[in-house]
Length: 426
Image (cartoon, rainbow, N blue to C red; front, side):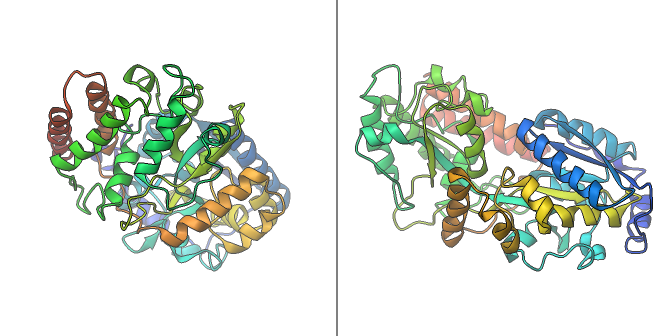
């Protein structure tokens, strides 16, 4: 993943602050043009464009051009445009990056356009504050989600499991996965391999009352904790409950590459809003539940802004951009156009607007987030610089353990040492 370096911003800050101070006085003018940029998928592109089209019909004289590309390319292009003083007016932002962009004065502090035209009074405190950096609001969540275990309903029913609740445990998962693996030995497994997924390890640490990173961007896990995580999945592989290394290694992180999407396992680990994407490419009926729990320990789940919408601090139409966000998160036409593709709306009123239009998956997503909210742990600090590299590092080292190139302890030592070094030089 690309980051903006300090030199790219060196000529940027002062002019930015000056423009930001002018917010509030600007009014939409006839012929106002804005740009909106997001990372997405075909479904998101269609919904976002529909929302922008609806806004253009409402706001005479306003035109919003749009552009969408994949996650990997997005941050490179956004960094280039921002450094060149040509950032889009409306920027889809991720929790992983908002601190960096906000602290470099590239995003507008939204207090200047609140409560008019932007009113977040019906947002839950957690949803509203998820876009805050250093006490100021720099992004409005377009939906919230939490991690979720996606599973094949029919395969669970074949081993006598009709439904999961939030209390199911790691022991339950091992037993169910093992029984499913026996149905089609060597070709289909109970669970995909979560040892190589950074968010899986983070969740496991959350269940132990820890965040993965400290507030100042250092590793907040020990070598022994990494070894415990690797050992858990090593045992699942050895009992046949978990897909073997050669199957797991083909999972690139794209929805269609997960084990459950390739028809090789009954469980995969993702985010709750992704259930829609998983179901769209699966012939089996899917459902979702929490990650396995540890009795007497925190759930490990937190409510996360799946995506935020921010305004460039250099936009010449900041108030109009704020009106568009207001339209997306609070007004019927905008809220319904976006639906819950980006997660459950942060506003209670917006949730009511879409309730009657939700299909079974949509209702399941809303119910899931509501249930997780009751047991959620606090939102962790945003991933520090270098976290993207550590995500790749974990995948590489976990694969080496799974393939038997090194044992659990050696793999844990390697991952811990390299992760500490990555963060130190980031």
